[in-house]
Amino acid sequence: MTVGLAPAEVLWRAMAVPRLLDCGMVPSDVAGLRAATDEGVPWDVACAQLAEAQFERADGTSVTAVEALRAGAADLLFAQMAHNFDTARKRELYAAFTAAVGRAGALAGWERVQLPFAGGYLVGWIVRPAAPRGTVILFGGQSGWGAAYLRLADALVARGLTAFLVEGPGQGEPRLASGLYLDVDVRAAYSTFVDHVLARPDLPGPVGLWGNSMGGLYAGTTAASDRRVTAVCINGAPAQPRLLGMRTFDDQAAAMLGTTEPDAIQRNFDRLALRPGDRIESALLVLHGGADPIVSLADQQPFLDAADPDRSTLRIWVDGEHVVTNHAEERNAFVTDWFCERFQR
Image 1 (cartoon, rainbow, N blue to C red):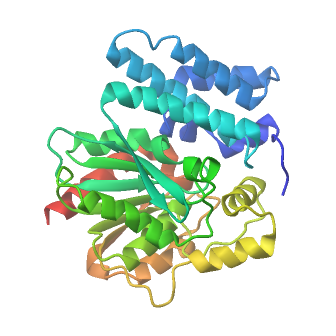
Image 2 (tube, rainbow, N blue to C red):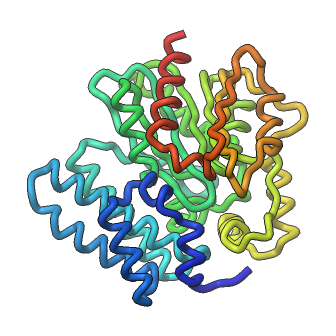
């Protein structure tokens, strides 16, 4: 496990174009990042420069400002991803990302939520339609968190569902600012978000979970422990995680736990895994990309085995990359329609 900025081509593999677009980077900034890194500009510097250019546009109308702030926030999201470990530079970039989201949220009417947990805190953004009829708690895994999923929130809100974009233990601000690592009760942490939704009369309707990458594991295990969850989508997650011998994945796993000791990381993965006795009583949707180099269909099969076959759905994109970023629009439409149907039932 290595601390330091990886070469540009390694970062381009870890953060390929479909992923950049999926998490909100605009096409012109993708092209600008390619040109800058080809000229030798460090990845994080290039992303930060692109963000500053977007922020210069944010003094127009409120609509233009929100668009520019979202684009700049996405640039900063990927700037901090260049640093797997919690360096001062990563903290600086993530704080700038959070501030940009806060500025956009103040204009767009998003609500920031901060919840105490295990000596630290959890955070999230609530993005609401005019007349909500259910809430989906949406989260990522090892490197993309919270407002990284604003495009998915757009799809939910367009269909009348509230999106709760959250950051859990070992992720984003809870880790970088409050010192909350992945050694706590993760199922209880995500149930804390469920508690919050169900305690609020302004967030009516059923509650669903949508977990992406390793976040899909947290979604599946939380649904297995919390019967209040009506529907859960697992997108590209291993039921029994392990170190993969891939620098980015293994370094990020170390950062989430706060140790570089491989045995300690694997023991924690074993603790987080779907257990033999777990049952997922809620409706279940598993998404799989046939070209995913990280998670195989066999890695996801235990989730399906733990669910009622009559209430579970498997959707495969044969050429799908990890978490199906290369079919993002179709993926988002399919999943959000699925939540709407399950909530109506």
